[in-house]
Amino acid sequence: MKAQMKQANKANARFALIIGEDEVKESCVMLKDMEKSEQQKVSFDAIIEKLCAEVKG
Image (cartoon, rainbow, N blue to C red; front, side, top):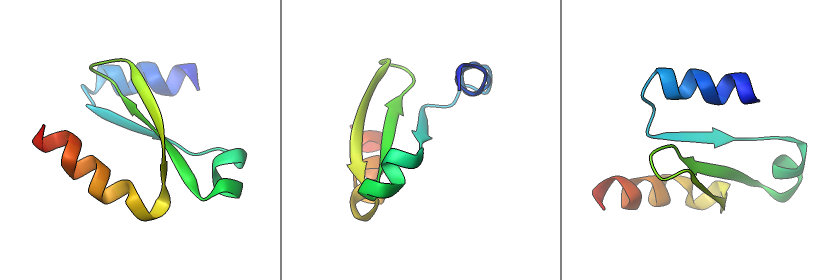
């Protein structure tokens, strides 16, 4: 996963979504804010709303 995070940084991605086995079982994703180096767990149902809110500030 470290290589994927480096690639996201190179691409100047603002956010990265991390989906592993645990996240699939819990129906969620880890939303990583690449600018702030923060991450939080967000449900599948709320991801679009959360991303829109983050982008709007």
